[in-house]
Image (spheres, rainbow, N blue to C red):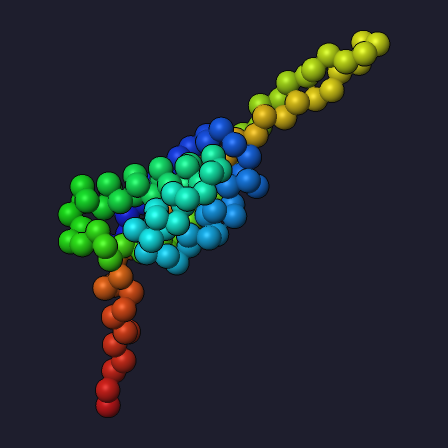
Length: 122
């Protein structure tokens, strides 16, 4: 069964978060949390929080073993851009783009993925 969690409007550029989302894709959830814990980046903290939330969702929905959860999908989409202007010399203005991101993590049980597809025997 799949368990999903998301963080909408994360206060960071999606480009800075994507390497961490790519790194944890395919890892066991416990292993991914342990790996992210040793990075000093804010992006690692954001991805770690979403994985913890997905694990909480799995526990709430009755997952049998939390150790068997695997990160099957981790994606970071761009969110809205807040546009402002900074006054500059001689009456000109420079644009400021404050970017946001949406982080989506999906966990799945390992036992479902390990079952081979049944083929009809004749």
